Image 1: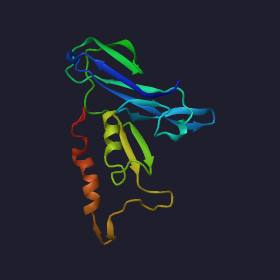
Image 2: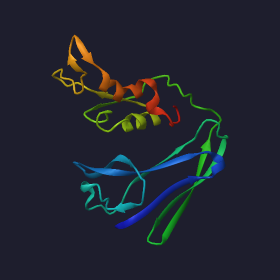
Image 3: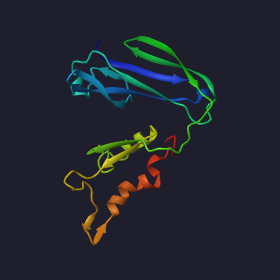
Image 4: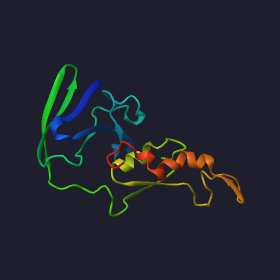
Length: 187
């Protein structure tokens, strides 16, 4: 059905150290009809249909993605959690059990999982949010700043003999120094 405010929460016992995030899936039009696609962080109650997703105007259900992050040093064994969905005074609680194994993924990747993008995700537009999201999910965002005709979207200012890199360095510098990833699991 439809609802103004559906609250969705995934939580684990504090001693497990498991951190969680919930995303609503934004809809896109396909040949097969509307399909959930883009994961948008759920910061407040979910509306069905979503108020900020015009393609979901006739939406009568919603898809969410729940993530659990197990940090280094978490104890191996079962971690008990609960998924709670509440709307109009009714609550559904689903018990969740996560098996934490006795190994840790290293912070350094042994390969470069890469996502290419043209036109979105650059510091000059959305800031560093796309790069942080990719880094948090153990992948790299490669925002390509050139087009098939060789034209660059974001060249430094000036002539070839004397380029001014100041603005470029201010916006892209945090990616090279690592400052852009402070506060993330692999900062």
